[in-house]
Length: 385
Ligand SMILES: *Cc1c(COP(=O)(O)O)cnc(C)c1O
Image 1 (cartoon, rainbow, N blue to C red):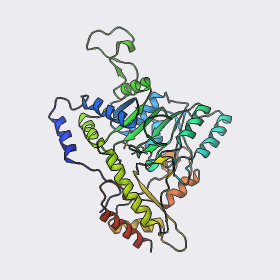
Image 2: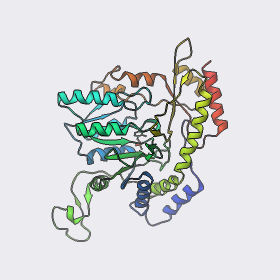
Image 3: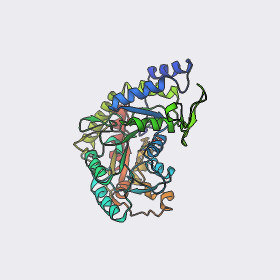
Image 4: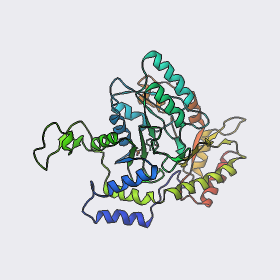
């Protein structure tokens, strides 16, 4: 079976993890700041805060921006549920903005329209989370302008997009946002097993997120309510969590990060081959925005079910039978039962729903060989007959 995504572990990764296991610190040790600094440098951000998942990163990012009851968080329906759930964790209400049918990212036109409506109704969002779907950056210049006009904060969900570029700069530098988050789940571009990072240029937001990942505890006398009792003293000054990353994970992430550019390049080589070889098939291939250099986490195609051709389900099953581990990204979040219980309905975001009804993610990972890719392509050709 060729999977749709797969991690790559090299001997230097194994050695890095073993070196931590042989050391004095399994967690809260020197690899955390070392990894954080490497991620910050790689993205061109001032600060990085490592946590145990991107979901945790989204949660503490929302908390650091003071999202809470009575506030609204908006995101794209074409994402993993975590991009929306983080708002619910904070007691906020969640709403969605439909996607652009070309990029499958949140549509800036729909966002502008929804904002002017929300302004009239007095329910503007406090936080908007653009998701860089498949590794392709959203139109951040235009989203930033709207943020300045309407006064919302921006968290970029760049779970798919480490190593991606936007207008010639690295995604994660937070030029247009308050915070950017990344995921290091094994299907993503680089991995720490489980893990995530939040980057920011704001020292206060970084310090707040560091505190929130560790129970809301501080050891800084300047932040305490009264004089410390002694050198052992700490104070819990707000409610935080245990969202810490281990040093084994940080060492693995640091080692993986050294190969990031190569991984993204390999993904682009695969994309170029897919683009050429699928061009004569009755499928829609993913279009690339000229401002974006995608990290190509995914290669989602759309199956057009017309002229008596097989539909998405038939093609999906035929590919699985042929040993191709395809997947579908994403079931629109608002159609999940949990969100339908909040009042969302099928039909609310037609572009995301139409896209979902046709989408299949073909295998795309750095170590997929050309021979493996050729098997995928010939299986797809057979499935579309
Ligand atoms: C994977 C993913 C997440 C969650 O990442 P975890 O590290 O598994 O918590 C959030 N948002 C998007 C868009 C993702 O793809």
